[in-house]
Image (cartoon, rainbow, N blue to C red):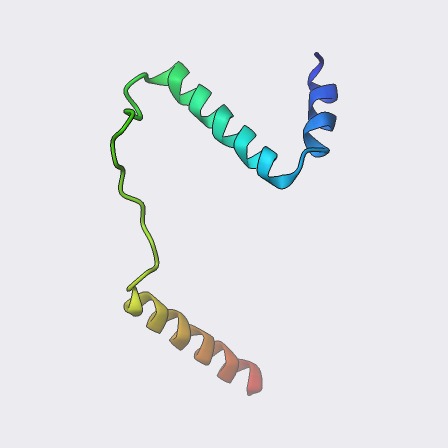
Length: 72
């Protein structure tokens, strides 16, 4: 199947199927590069903004500064 035809079919997919396709392709690429990149049944840490009050304060200060600059 030509890539152009495949891409047009992908565009018609619902969002969840596109996400599943991305996950599938990423997994296939990792398998091709390094078989030990992800190990089944193992936990991997993922960063989350939960309990990151320092980052929130920095962003709020930046927004306040920008708002003051905008208002003159």
